[in-house]
Length: 439
Ligand code: GDP
Ligand code: MG
Image: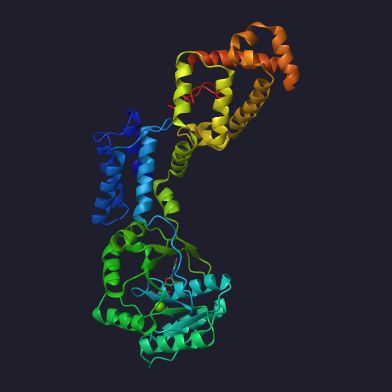
């Protein structure tokens, strides 16, 4: 997905701002990319509409290029599409937490029961597993095996009992013996049918779960949309677990679940072992899908950290060639508020080519500059020519800042050159060899 999106960003990058016109191309690419990732068509439509609405009427943020801004919008919209926040399991005020697992056969329900049992146990909860898959003899054995592996008891009544009865008695045991959590495994079928849904509803009515989770195989792709819809209509889901994320799925299912049901994915399964379960973080998935996490956080920090007025004022002073050492100090401090120069520069597109050594050098140099500017008088800061024309002044600054006199001279020369051709905020930085943020 990220590769095909790259092309899209290029188109916007060339224009100065986001317009209804220039986002058309990228939106077409994004649409295509999402469909290729196996996201269902209605979900894609909803997504594209959301992005378009957000782009129009967008405020321009200083220091952020339009393509970066579009990445951010797409990212935000993806996160929104997946439910925004990471969603926890429901924890009731009293009584045990009751988790009902639903889903088709082979998607990983039983495995997920074991994984979740382990995860809850790690939260110091006393967990009971309940086996209601009475159709296959191996199913109960499988759960018992997993239960042994994670050291959690399994309640079962053999294959003759009715699933709803097993669930009810399992819950009674949990109440009596003060378990904190009950996880109920159910039978799945290869396809959605009324018997399966009916049984699920019966079990649900018998135990009133705090969470009803649909287990979805990530490989399901766009069919996930229909699946989630049916299960949600039949059993009022509270969320989902997306399994087999370690496989080579295209990720489409992750985008469909919340979009279709309004219920979040709460966990993802990432392997066959019992510890291969992770909370689902929409923002991390989105950044992975886009492959542009760095740009997203850059824009976020810019929006938070840069006071636009300050940036405008600075730009004006640069333009009028009034930029002095005070402005420079301000600018450095503004940047350090944004989280350090090194991390900042690394986030700029095209800056990947800059080596660690160069980055480190630039940051180190900034520290020296700060010390040397600190040793200047107010006069000297406001009128850079004073230092440029006086050897004695440079000597004094060197002495007071603890730097070599040649270092002071270098700064003065660099500052003069910088002042001459400074245009953008990020324009020319000392030690950066005159790189600009326009790539
Ligand atoms: P159920 O029929 O829904 O209960 O599915 P199972 O729990 O029996 O799992 C079916 C198969 O999928 C088993 O071989 C599991 O080991 C495998 N499986 C389950 N979850 C994952 C996962 O997250 N990643 C991988 N790679 N395999 C999984
Ligand atoms: Mg099973």
